[in-house]
Image 1 (tube, helix red, strand yellow):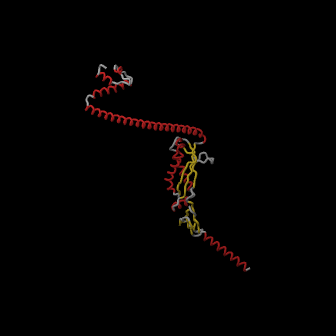
Image 2 (cartoon, one colour):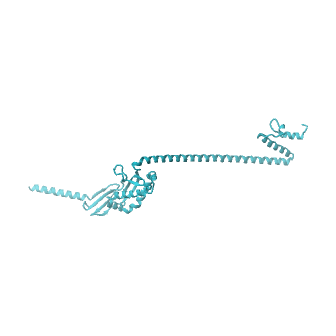
Image 3 (tube, one colour):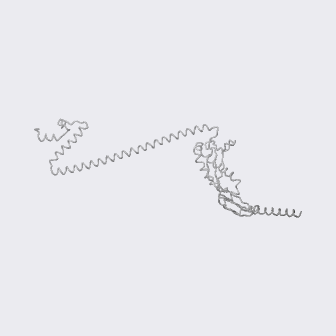
Length: 316
């Protein structure tokens, strides 16, 4: 009897000791990489441990909340085709048309101590507040654009606008989060008018293709015009250079002739007849007749030196 009582008391003491050890061990927390923690002691925040081993007071005194600060969270804002709520996610445009729109908002928890405290205090309301802010930003943007602008530019312009608006308004709510990315998931007119909008979009696409084709043709013609202008400029420059060379040769020839005339004045008559021969030959080549000089033409062509010889020797 005494042995059984002693054994029972020993087992009870062992259980109590194990419970105390486990209770004391509850103050040991492992914070994984990519996590931050907030330690509350009797409800008051006392520490913000980084990844590693944290030794605190046991459960009931300390409470450790761990948050993954590198995990990207996502919420859907606006229209959800899976839900049977036709007016959910519909926004009114500036020209009084409706569009169905859904955004995907990606965010992360801030890593600073202040942001961790804010997220801990607001974590049950973070997504609700974020959704309302996004809806307000989307409604503001859609209401200032007509339906064509919304459908054509919304995929690119709306996420940028919404992100800027959230950056302006989020700090006032102290949610402890950062917006990483926003993109449009769904952007269509209501089901009842979707075929008409599809036809308009197709027509606008055809117009855009025609404009692009016209622009390409205009650019091609501009390139051709520039190439032609360059070729004509090169030809004009080559012609100018040839004229300069020809003029230089004629100047040199004239200077040589001038020196020859200085030595023999009788050469002037021969020079005059040579020039007359050249001028009249050019005239004849162009289809003109030079009478009666043509009657005295040389078999090899017009040779006015023959007239000169006739003048000096009329008997011939």
